[in-house]
Image (cartoon, rainbow, N blue to C red; front, top):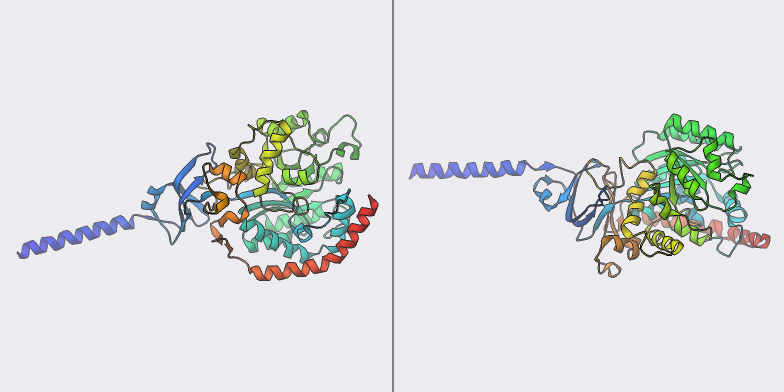
Length: 472
């Protein structure tokens, strides 16, 4: 009997040790996301139902089905509750601090850029406004699932500080232009400012510094060539407005050449260049862009609102040109999130080509994720949910009435969803939005800052609009 008891105890001990050994074999992680439909946006557009994503520190270490729950453990488990798990969206063109002016100049002013935008900025822009407006815009993007944005504006060090405070990723291009602006009292002073900014942020984990020459018609050939040399030296992006207006060749006094041909002839088109808008381009232009491996930021909502035209995006994609989605500045589309832009991206192309079969939802979602990453040359790091990539991930809930039914998650995102459906935003492995609430900044503090900005600007803006209208 004693031997029996000893054997039973021994077997029980061995069983417990065995169980303990099995438990200990689980690999440790930081965050596990489970119970959702994963849109990986990998090269095969793989979709994983009832999927699991495993994050350790700032990287994705495993993606698969629920069997991964037997392999990994983490202190934080996020239940997606049958929502859509997807890469964070990438806004490839904006002027974020202009969110302080959102809703102004909507009285039908004809020359809105030069008669209203520039004078408004000249009077009201400051370091303080740029910082506070970037805080506000970054909050708006974080809550709506944009984890990376590309921007061209002023005082980029202030924008970088605010962007990092909220916790999203920014590709920030210091504006270079031929006249004095808020952060450069001499023409082209933005070049020196940009170099200092690049030196400060060249190794930052969230900020990619860049050059932002405004446009070929506002930056001389010599200065564009200088920027090209510096961008090669520092290996940073160059973002520039091209083909936004139909008279840019005339502004440059070009004869029998397009703006793209001009840029190519002076040696400023390459794989580091992102062309914002690209509306008024011909087939030869597209072939040059493809040959030089430059990219396009497609801004369909802003272009429709500004009546500047519809880019040949379908043809760009057919030629395998890198194309990302953008909102343009918050005075151009009044948005910084991409949800309405998703719908515009599809619908405007179908209208342009009179073909309802093109620009299917999966293609549009690719532009908003991995396509944007490719356009910014960040596709080795972000844009898809794959092992080894940085953990920039969002969860879009599917329980709200506008999300039901949800037969095709791509179609649901493009034609049904809105920013309020974003439940969770993770950037660089850090949860910055959870249960639709921002975790990195006091929302009430931000509201007070924006109300003060609004009170300061309102009266001047009203008078400026009347003056601009009288000039039409």
